[in-house]
Image (cartoon, rainbow, N blue to C red; front, side, top):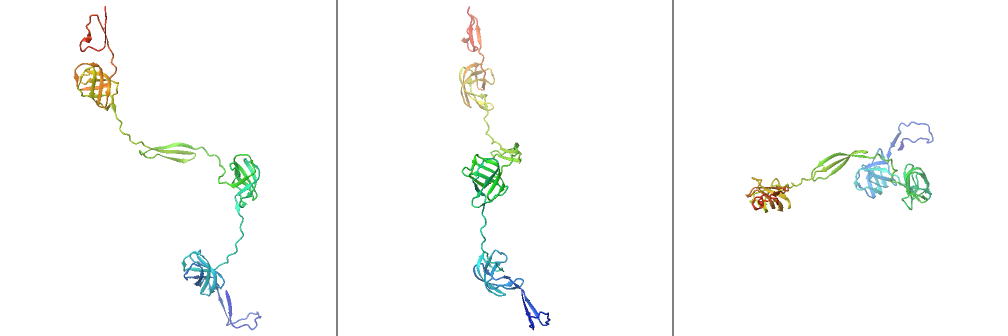
Length: 377
């Protein structure tokens, strides 16, 4: 703020006695180093001129000041440089530093600090170190004199650290840090691998935590079993929270099978055949299914009206529509064209005993089959 006195000059400038000047006037001017501008300018280096309005006072920028002019709505977009010309309504800067891009017409102008010199490089810390301390692989407290790899060792109490044999990494010890400095590290080893006494160690912060306590054994029971659609995919899911969980299954139904063929060992025939010994062929139709006689099977074909009229013998040829048997036994006589054919049990062979004077029964037709024996005197 500037203050100026307007009035009669004092007669004695060294006289500090209060005086009263009726016609004296004191005027004040409030200066500011913040201004706004609606001048449209591109974000780029070089000379930039802005028509300005002070914020809270009269702009009072001076040549040589470092000024930052930033986008009022996006302060990260700005131009910055030294003032080359200034008045209460206008300021020109030589922009040497810019951030962002575009053309902006809403600016805020403020005094910018000069960038200071770069500070000294900080300490580089590391979580990897080596040790030549001779230590036996085993559990318990282990202390190592350490040297950082690429920086100053920086371990913290509570970290999980693995110390492994530099030449044979499978020989290691791992545990929580209990004491740490830039030259020494102590860990409480709870996990080891390998054996021996080693004096070449590499120590690193481990990504593997300390092994926790063994949890309870899980119990898995069968939950729901659902029949899925035929041809669908099987599915399984586990529900519940360990250690008590259920296995739920969806099992697809099997596809519908083709109709099975029904076979039968009973057939009918309208083939006209005589009651005779020898080969007899019938055209057949199955009863309740497809005929399924086999060669060598003993079958009987009998008249449906007079079942006592029959031929019986072994099958010599068979299809689903035809049957041939070698008739070795008959009953009755004549011919028939209405037959039923079915498996037959073996027929008992009869034995006949003839007296010395009985006629020979085999000499006449229709005699019972069997064995005949004649007694002699």
